Image (spheres, rainbow, N blue to C red):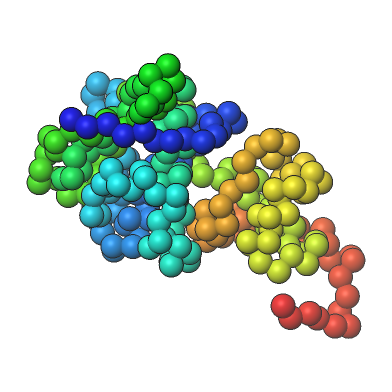
Length: 247
């Protein structure tokens, strides 16, 4: 067994269990996208524990020492989560919310625990605890949670509530915002946009890749087509037939 300090510089006080679960799910989806592996599985066992399983290359404890993963930075069109900083934020949130976490891969079993900071016995910080792999032949990574409720997981899987997503999709049309990355930047500081979409003043804004993936999924649903058809119907009296704009 060995431990290392996660060196979490700032605790995200506004994160709750669903935000942390979203980060784990996002990283599992990223591994699926980057390796073209089997679909991610999210399940609940008979003991009431939730599991998130990907079939990629397997999490290593070294991933938790990174500020950001270079592979992910090279594929912004594919990825959602942030190995390293994002997972550390998630682990800190699970610890603060009293959720037990076990991350298993062929590289080792990882849990979290409070321990004295190296060289400062009077300071206790959050550490990753690494044990030999309990399943050396495991394909991918399996994360098991004790204390996560069904409501927590349902909220985490619904990465962006559809009603918020639909409102946000109207903003680029109203205000000529040229990209979804710029839209996320505007939502980060524009209180009017936050109010319109339904975000609380201090609520975290979505990653632009998360937004894009949810948009693609939602626009394939009937409710989205009905929504925009109704918006168009209400807007028709104010539309001009003399010109059109191509962006």
